[in-house]
Amino acid sequence: MRYGILRYDRIRKMRNEFGFSQRKVADFLKIAQNTLSQYETGDRNIPNDILVRLAVLYQTSVDYLLDLTDERTPHRRAEGKQWFDF
Figure 1 (cartoon, rainbow, N blue to C red):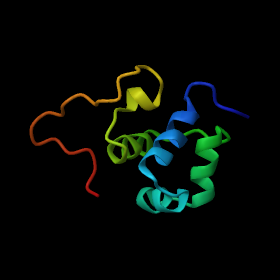
Figure 2 (cartoon, rainbow, N blue to C red):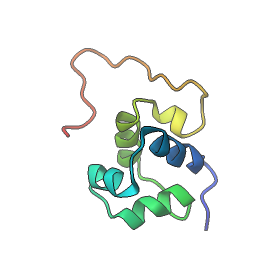
Figure 3 (tube, rainbow, N blue to C red):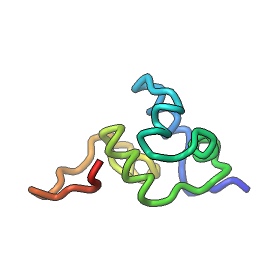
């Protein structure tokens, strides 16, 4: 079953633009490489926390990853707000 809400090609495209392997991104996300592969092909839905981590990694917004905007630059975060403790 493919999930239609996300544009999975954006997630793969951004990984390739940054020159990251699936293994490197999977290690960053603390998931298995085949899980990332399933996210990129649309065979598996991406949890919200993973979307946020991907947005941080690729220096973009979740909205861009979800194809809700074509603006790649993320909104400025509030002072002192952290998404994750990497």
